[in-house]
Structure formats: structure tokens, C-alpha cells
Length: 111
Image (cartoon, rainbow, N blue to C red; front, top):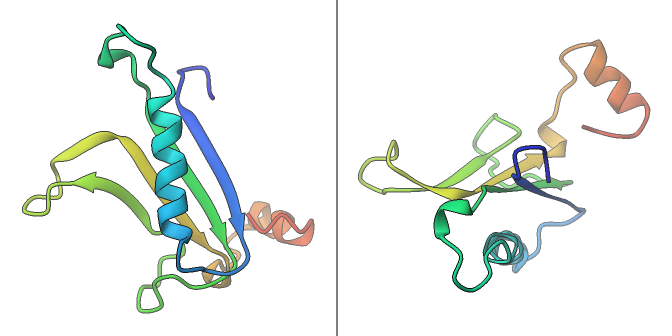
């Protein structure tokens, strides 16, 4: 949790499994609902961000290495239900762009 109350769930996954997306969604949702006790107003809820570092390619036809998902209106993606966001860093697509990223790669931190 950061200073603003936002929660971050970080996970590393070597292989993309059939239940992986459901597990990420489940864990983020669980963190979101655990913020409320009975008789507490919904307005106190803070966002939950799920960051998954994956050693496989999830979206092979896209060049970006970090697909970012939100809950959006299908007809107009600018309309969003806030509270849960998901970022999947596809490590095989990650290419070093600067010296800071190179240091991370050398130390074995990948990102």
C-alpha cells in the first residue's frame, strides 16, 4: 500500500497457465473487497493494481511489452469503472532502452 492507500499486488509467473488470468482477477478483487467492513461507505475504497511479471508472451501480435487492462465500457472505452487495473509485463518482449534498464537487466531484476 502506498501513502494514498492504493494497493499493489506484484506477482511473477514463469509460464502462462490456463487459470492465471482468473487467479490475478480473483486476488485483485479480494484485495479490493477486504478494504470494507460492515456499515462503511463505498467511497473509502482505494484502487488496487495487479502487476504481473510473466516470462512468456501473452499477446504475440502486439509489440508493447506491458498490456494494461481496466474495466471499461465496451461501446466507449473512455468510460471506466475505477478500482481495479491489471498490468502484465511480458519479459521476452522487454528490450533495454536506457542505462537504468540495463542495470536492472544486469542485476537480474529484469524490470
